[in-house]
Length: 202
Image (tube, rainbow, N blue to C red; front, side, top):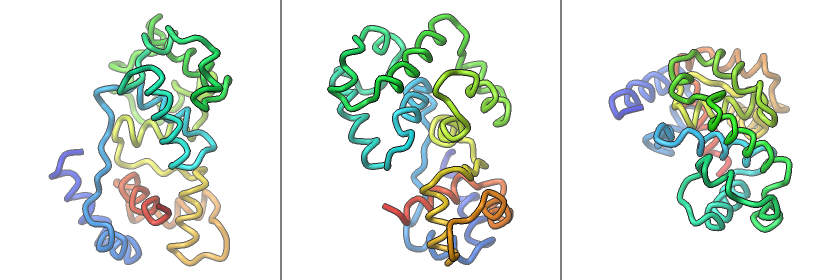
């Protein structure tokens, strides 16, 4: 997602949806940037974020990293820590077990991020949900924030559904079908559109 790409994407969204036009004018350039340099970190972060608010997830992640003395999660660091660290950093034992499982998968070669980069979005989701603790939502967050895939719409994301309701003045949070219908004009930049909608909940 370089500057040229982002400019093209934002121009498309601005011209295809009056609500997004207003949000783009309000929030300015999209600062969404993928974590391609550390994809394990991005996936671990997505697991930590499950069923948490953005602010709570960031706070727990920061505390976890501080306990490791690290800036990013790595398989090596995760496999060194004792399970007793979980209550200290606020990460549930289940989530820590899932992240350990991913670290082991990387170590064994069962999860190869270089190989994943070559796959289509649907193939990546199918691969990731084969690991314990990763569902479609987690895989979609990884596609957006880890890989920077531009056309992902996470119709199961509670915050995004709320943002749809508020910004499109709906009587209730939309169904997945309604979200897909509303977002059709955004393609192929639904990830960037989602970023603007999420911003309205900050």
